[in-house]
Image 1: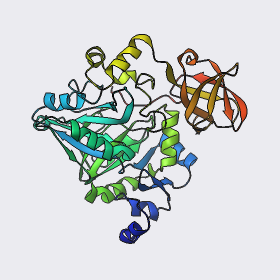
Image 2: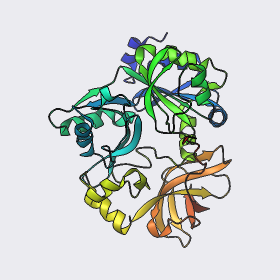
Image 3: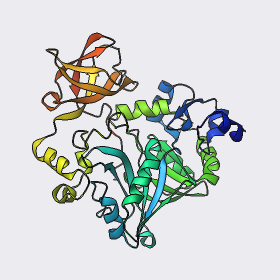
Length: 383
């Protein structure tokens, strides 16, 4: 066992309940969002490939979990809708929705998942999952705007595991969870290996899979039960990043931030019709103007020619040498067997098929704007 008390005197890093399991498995641990987290176990490419082929298990317990609690769904939803552009009022029982906290300019303070319990007895409660680096600011921001009768209850006593890949559903069924027929973005309770969990059929890899919230006291037992299955391998943050990049999924602080709106980020699908029409969220005037007239820039996929990756911060030029944007995420895509990138370009250059030039280590590299995702999503939509 690691001496957490001693470690705490040497570094301000925090630890998830699964830290000792990662160390025992030989993971390479790195600081991430204030936590010591596994970046890889046997290697990023091998872990990436295993998740695509079978089931990868991720420790994402550093994420922020909380419950927003009010007297009824409409009241709680209205409180949250003051800060996010999604239609939370229309979120059905047993469903989950993706949205963003916005600033007065329509910029993204953070992105988050919102779940509504299928149980009528919990009808005034919404479960929130936010990014680790932003969670303290997010929760303070939310609490500062809550009306009387609605409160935020942090769930720091809960861990979060993500089981991702085409065999994830079979693994959970073998462990006793009745989840086989759940469509994508279902949110409910399930018993896994005899442990009560809050489960959503979701994740951030582009693969079918599940995110599993469990009490800290049961996290190790759940992890052990999952990794005991032959289809499951533990996966680090390195492969999580390459999977989400191939899936065209944004990473907060890189592809989205306070200077990007959901429209610019190509996240307009996350703002439902009622909210587009009515507004009533921070920065609605900016976002609705961009919906009506177009955003000045857009997030796009980029495929560099050759094998050299274009990393974050790489300048994007038009083919006649004019600066038109910047790469926000880039690297090697193991599934596509080549470099992939995302970034923002001026709207006039955002169409798929547009040739561009990337300045990689001071040298021009030919590339092309492509449609996202690089690897088609394999979410389970139901029969």
